[in-house]
Length: 356
Image (tube, rainbow, N blue to C red):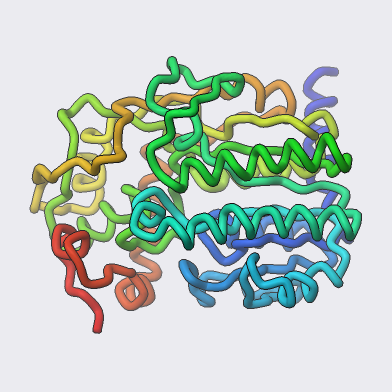
């Protein structure tokens, strides 16, 4: 009986999207494009991809009849009025000025997008009566460097080391205000080191796509640690499943929860595994640690997401890496063309040819 109930609940959370209008800010990004496809294939009436394409590419947006792409910024109220005029039933706020080093280099842009842009999204969602809003926060960021492992949702830190970390926390604080003051049904999801098909490498991107890009280019992988550093890498489709659940379960409203694998992965061993799968003989080289990178280990508790959402990450890490590398190979021409490494020390250190 228990298993029959679980199957019925699984069908319920997926059927929830049939006939719905769903708005995804940042819907052309790595997580957003995979979420877009998943919801569109669940027979949503319309999935609105709202993205300014500052860190995304149109070839990565699913080409499906119920997907509408609208180019625009979350700081542009004219563009926001256009998409909210379509009266989305559910919305996912994934758009962000990503990520830590980018925010250090451009703190004003970070504040405008992640601060003001998030505030505007909440205001428009509240005014148009959106039935559920899911905010993408960052578990890698908001806990600070002193939090005990595994990281649990009730821990808070005022010692954040980048503007991105600060504004991701700001988005959660505004979410609390709109939930308590206006009753806006918000769910706060905290992502950890996502990876998988859909993320194009670049100067400000995550370590896994950048390592894969280097490995497939026959370049050594730059490693900044001592060898015992870890991260909680989460496969993108596990995150998508959590987001689908967050858009359905009412008990998640007003709550914050880690969306992670709950597994600690050694970064050096991850780099060696990428070289092994790709056949890269260039090995690993030492690189200088970034000033803000103060966390040697990351591991999230996912008990709350399990209890509230029935979330269970399924992807084996080695298989997830293999899937991601296969995606790189399938889209190698587009990735080589669009990988973003602008002039400067970061590009030189990465060892790639800078595009003119």
